[in-house]
Length: 456
Image (cartoon, rainbow, N blue to C red):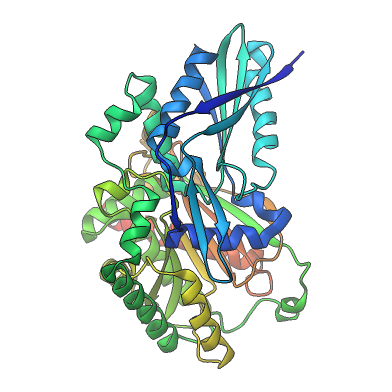
């Protein structure tokens, strides 16, 4: 039998303040507040074993240090007129903690159920801090830690930073010691930079880059949509495919080393080449999610910093190696312009769309991998040749999503134990399931074939 109680984490004398929201905060707040009851799909769920199990008070103390370290974890958001958003960093307050007590052997099952509860409802951003906490306890010890983060408080890179900081705190560090050894850019500080003359120039340059690329790009990428008659059906489901490839996990590093680019450039270049070959358009565009953590202080931040870069590769269908090599330089240019006032950019893009002068920018690429976590960490690297390993690829169809605005296809790259995952969601009016499979397997085969050619 499992019982429930509520504890609290009390925060006193933390840093406090208020000011304009950052560009990243504004961007994601605008998305999640429009989604209403569908907003929980943007929540960031975490379900961790606590090994060895720790006393409840010790875990609560660890989490208190995290709140003291990162202002974003005790921040609320208040709309300010039609075009404003204010961040309010609370210096004191209480964070509720759901504690479930039951048999230790049920801790994983109870944790999964609690995660569904905490992550399955929208956040009230005006009243609620962007973190929910649950503990699965047995005999006075916590066996599972459950966290649900609001996307307004952190992105996936920020979540990774949060978990690494939690490990440091569990090992004996404090908010004060971590802040001294590794200063982190806090959101109020970032907002000050963005409001400065330098920040305004960066914003203007980024929006100018977007408009130039959108004006020059193709009006439609996929020339022959799979089922155009579905485009007017708001109730159509968007299939979700997951390709899990051990061969890709091995091959991508070999190709990156040979072509002297990052493995991220290999994957984005392969995706661009495959999309160009399939679509009939030599030029392709992806909205690429960029972490925007190029400086050490930004890399140490738990906040919403990531935004999209507009990546446009011309003649992407010409040659695979050429596409990959050029991806590196084109991506650098795009990434330089991946921080901006999204609300202002959206208004400019809407005018282009209204005049019929905007390129198709409905394809999305999000490489979510943590560079500190590899597919073979803790898992034996396969010894089979790539020509055999590619036969172990698995393709599944986990779910369907509601129709998404301005999404023809969205691809996430994820690290899995012993494999790389490509997760794809697509509009069936543009790409049917056969087209999705052709794209995913095409990306995999391009990279694996290149690696085999280097010597299997």
